[in-house]
Length: 77
Image (cartoon, rainbow, N blue to C red; front, side):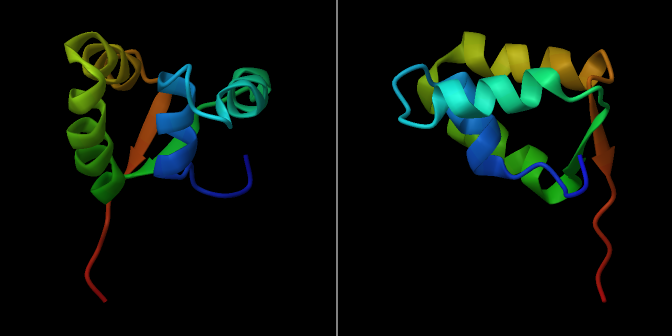
């Protein structure tokens, strides 16, 4: 993927009721990976996924642990 993975795409994949769920799921599942996630987005996504339930948040954290998602450090400029 040429760009960093955005929080809205990860949230859409996690939420089957999201109007963009199917499209984001297809695009992200076809990427050879690893998908790059800015570190600052990890915290934001965890907070939002917690609202969907512990299972959603845990699945995201397992993806990080399995290195399916690569966390890129965020630096102050």
